[in-house]
Amino acid sequence: MHRLTCCHLAPVISCRRFSIAFVALSLLANTPRQAAAAQAFIIVDSQTGYVLQAQEAKKKHQVGSLTKIATAVVVLDWAEHKAGNLNQIVTLSPDAFVGTGENNIGFQPGDAVALRDLLYAALVQSDNIAAYTLADYVGSNLEPAASGSKGTSVTAFVSQMNALAAQLKMERTRFVNPHGIDDNVRPLPYSTAEDMARLTRYAMNKASFRFYVSQKERQISIQRGKRKLGYLLRNTNELLGKQGIDGVKTGRTARAGDCLVLSANRESEVVKEGAMTAVYPRHLLVVLLGSANRFGEGAGLVEHGWQLYDQWAAAGRLADPKKVL
Image (tube, rainbow, N blue to C red; front, side, top):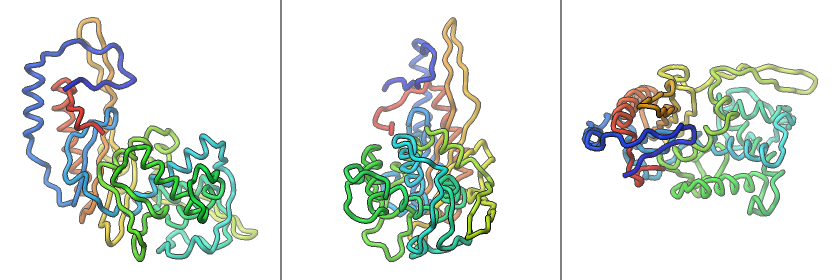
């Protein structure tokens, strides 16, 4: 066992009382499991990656629109490292409307929308047409060597999504499209609660991503011929703004059931002992897959997660390396 620290810590407080720490950790290990009807969940301290609790977290599931977290990350990485312009206006092709399901925003082929607004549409209101269009445009701008694919631009983009998964050691994840639709799709996409936690930790390190997923509402612009239309997006995450929850994403398909990833935070904890001071940012991630009541269960797991976190902190934040993402 060793102490996990973060890059924001001042010199770490020396030698806590280890007998008390191990007793507290023992209590933490024996905490009754939070009742959850979901097929899988995981609760993680996002600052260190320490897993506070998990249930079937390595089991493969379909994850629906949680896939769009990876889609957004590939787009943001492209914009950051390849000088991609998120203000670029792109035209929605007819292909974007094939097999993408509902069209709640009311997009039409030929609509012109900024990449930035498409990101909002994909992350805030979980729009599949927006996700496809992002993949189509960015995929066409990826270098062939980077995409590792000779197929369509969307195929090239999905290859980059899977390269990202490999980079993050998401060993039980396969992406097959940019939106997560799994109906009449072969091979099936899949991931795990643990892998989605890895992905979300990476995504939430990006200030731009954190901003996108924190928006309860967002006005976007659509150019349709000579008319400029406005549309007010509404976030599909009903828990946003409650219990310190500041993101991140919902997902749902018939195969996946209801899925949810939540980020929650509290004010940083300042611990003083003699002349030494340490500052501990307090951030939780909760991933919930295959739920029949994702918001009710999600709220319960966040509350339970803070109880586990407080016990872990009181124990000196000691962590088994095998339980760190």
